[in-house]
Image 1 (cartoon, rainbow, N blue to C red):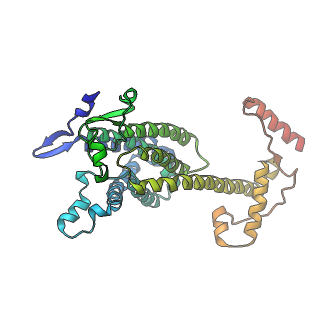
Image 2: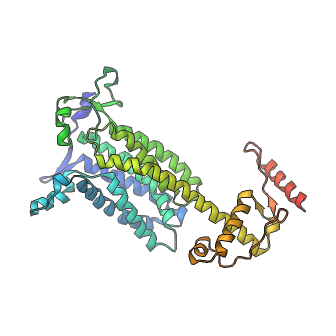
Image 3: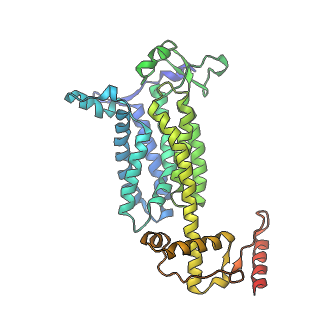
Length: 364
């Protein structure tokens, strides 16, 4: 497998300018993401032109913030800036040095700007759901660039049974090794090291498959894939950082914070969506005088009573949040509505319909 490490980092030259494989791979990842966005954007009322505009907002800002976060995490290397050459070193993205965490921040800012511009067609949550799978796809492809550059690898693999791809990768010309790890790495070079970039590719591929399935089905929680992405990606990075030679303490701390926070916020967001959707359904039925033919669960009833008490206290935000301009409060006594009947998920669809019909007749 040693021959895998012998790939020339330069793909070709344009005059005296080298064009490296890493840049080509990153561009391919971006294009793959754009293609997915173009294919899926119709689901949120956008067209291909909108997809390209989204791309032009997200990608430049993501690239800028990729570099900004990389530099800020290494103040001893890039600061203070005392000359023009120092400034060039800070912005010299062409020499390598980016971090995906910064790209996520920049990408979200770009998505927010685009969502504001297209607010009459879709919302920010829809945009986030749209770009999660393309982002993961770009990351999966982009990690191949780490293989070509011989970077982002992990600890030395000394067990002969694991000294083969995909468990390990052969390193003979390591790049991007922090000074404090030089002795550890170069004492083992050439040799086998943990293929952490490949582990991340597999992790992201699993996440992309799961999130695509959710994207196809999710209608109740627009934007939930954003929370899912941060939870999944940083969970993966949390254990990968323990294996990587070039792990940055800031990234490790970020993983420890982001994983539980994204999980809690995701659950809270789902509850918020449920309570708002449930209230609007019940309130619309009350206003239309159709409560007696509306099927409600115990949650719908309890939630409606809670929200009406909350709105009775006044305040603009609750009314805006629940979209409640007209609230003809109903007591929702049992018998005023159709009580939702719990049925087994194994019950055939026609049986479930009969059960609901029977419940409606019993009420009458």
